[in-house]
Length: 140
Length: 269
Image 1: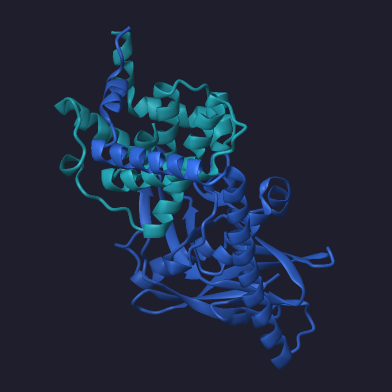
Image 2: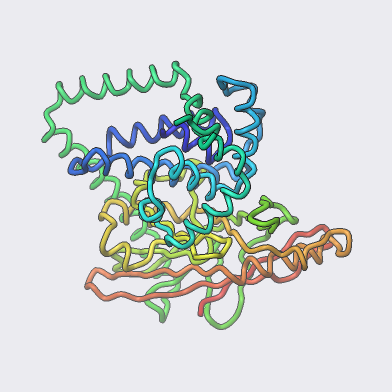
């Protein structure tokens, strides 16, 4: 999950690996002990997104190495899917991931990302429109 | 039910085994240390290190304050400098330059374009008997760079996204800090921000920005003026006697050279 979120944010597998290591280190050293499993998961998502934001600011410009050099996907069409996902603004990528993959509700996403639920909803709508083909496979 | 293509793709995104193995190894090492060092001792060492670090930082700050105040006593209890230039409320003071129309352009929703730009500035607060300093950057965000980066628990950084606006506000408000930030984190923020870089994100300016119609200087001036007028940095100082004072910094884009180098000024409001 951490790696996927990091890749969604940074678009670069090597950077995502760095974030994964950072977040897991933080998990070992700083994760509040009183959290439930679900609480820890939300905490991890939030820390990962924040670290990705910090990472981008650190390096300023995003590294734009080709995915094919680093990321191994199971099917060729999945590379096309990743390209389409990466075309979305970062915030929408996070929302799509949390909604469609982690199965969080809009209210939960709003809480995790500290966003207004209406904003989450409108971002989700926009992202859906762009990724219609990819997301509608489920119904076939 | 068949998984969507999106889910299938995400299923296939996995961290490389070598990274996973490396992290598992780190966890095992950590567990071993837990066994060797009792929790109580480990914690007290941790606190001890923090206290030492905090004391050193405080000592450095107080040392600087003492030195500065001895040389030039101020009417105001504290002063703010940006890139070493003292900022006042009587007018704008040049604090640095922005070079060219740099930064990242992002295509956002419905074809809108937003621009983000980094402006490195070192904000420092100097004053007597300062217990704590909290910064809030409005319409900008805070990053750290280089060797001066201090550790900060990222989960305690509060990021707020404004509804239907393209920029991100990331700040450490006094209210937020009072309720959620630990003393350790607040100390880190104060040290950390001394060498910070802001990233500013702004709404689209397509109508204003068209490099086929404007010179580089025109574009630079338009963009940076729009960027900087949205940004403010607020510093809240809490003194050792419990009283607090707040000063707010705003920025402006001054002259722009033909090459697109903009001079940035700051003042207190």
